[in-house]
Image (spheres, rainbow, N blue to C red):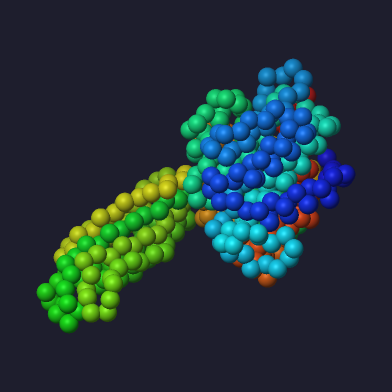
Length: 388
């Protein structure tokens, strides 16, 4: 396999930069969806819109085989103010493509065009352009609304650019590649009092502060050192003025791990510490969880296929399992729970000058477009080829 010589690379680059300049956040990707649908229709694909509100699905059939696979790209941007000054910077203050979903969308469109014009495969390709990966679990919504019932496939594949991984390199991981996560919310309820008379109250600020410190022992003292887990408190809300001990303080944060049993251990430990602090300080502590995403776990056969394709394109030395799996989360996990598949990383080059994921100076590296398109094309033809 060779990296493709794309005759429309300049057009694809312009398309990617146009998407970057017009970022749209979760379930508001109206313009992006229109651009995607228009492009797919121009390539001759069957186009479906409206799944998960702004999702777009393109279908390309060839030959007589009943085999079908899905290729997925995410479309949404982040609620983040861009600090770049190049011509294609965001036109919308407070929103930007800081994770490269503009590049993901462009690469999958580029692959759809190539495969429609000259693809060598026998079966059905389903191109899934998903909304709301960043905040609202758009993949879960698409699956729940019948993605794989309306478009039956046997396997599903995903891709993400990875700053710090050199251009021309890919990472293909066996098993877990991204962590499972949930958001926790801890309400500490005490008894308000005058700040000068603390003995008349039950101070939730002191209890919450002790709890923040106690939670840092969960990973170091409750998990096997060979297991990975994260407990991070990211928000503390409480109090209104300097001379009042408030009734209530709320903590929020995230738990992350690669295995369900580790996640359960994190939650069990968190709740035990909350109960202990409640008893020690005479307050009430209530815990709730939200926005759960399972770990993104690659299936063995699909991982072997993706690794074989990546090595054929990049060379064996440019495909590895490093960097290590990330404790960031990815809602593609919901698709992998429904169908076996594989999620890989594509090198975006050095993460210098702020060019890292979710940074206000990030930009997708257009030099990665050709390899991304080539990978999708080669994977589709390998999965649905005569010898597959």
